[in-house]
Image (cartoon, rainbow, N blue to C red; front, side, top):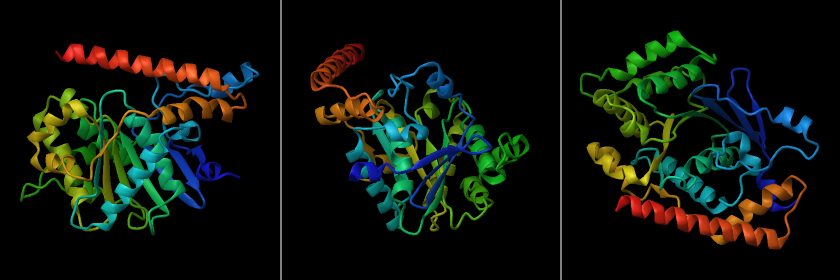
Length: 318
């Protein structure tokens, strides 16, 4: 078996409450979903079509369950893992990893189908089991955060009562003005010391674009920063953020300092080699390898589309 195949030797299955379990070499990552995401019935598609399901995602973002067919970003995945590991080793900096890039560059796919499965393939030292709570802020970020935390604590699919309680805890600052709700709630998670929690906030820009409640926004960001800054390593935070929203973070100086530091990771455009891998490998894995001429044509089309899209964005900004 090749090194590449060894690196992808993970198993992915769904738990009874709709979360995802990613395991590899005895290491387990529990991925707690904000809501039970609607999935396509690939089993039915496979039965209806003898050639099997489409190995490509099209314009849809990759998720944890798509890790086996996510190719082309191996260098970036390794870079994220190394940066995340360094945050655990440096006790003086918050365990807060921003993943930045323009719209459509693949931040969400990199975080969910690349980085999270990599934690199962290659766990952090002493962290063979971890929980990852995946959420998007939406218009009510505190409610969204309370929901995934309630799932993590109770193990239930729809813990409405706990969600209400946790939201109240998250929105109330302490006497010294700190938002400690997330840290306190994390302590209620079973075996939190041995199975730390990673909060993955996808599309973090929604905190600014959708949430009109300034106090709720302040409380949400305050909870994330406080928990990630604790001396224990029970909670860490990963966010994906569109680069055109970087200016908005200046409203929150501590967050802005983190995003402007070396611990942030900017997602570059795919190279030609990465594009070739992303195009060729899924078809090869499905048992229908593409010939070199077809791959060359698709790479050329992708590069042309990228130039057209970039030009359109530039014109709109003008």
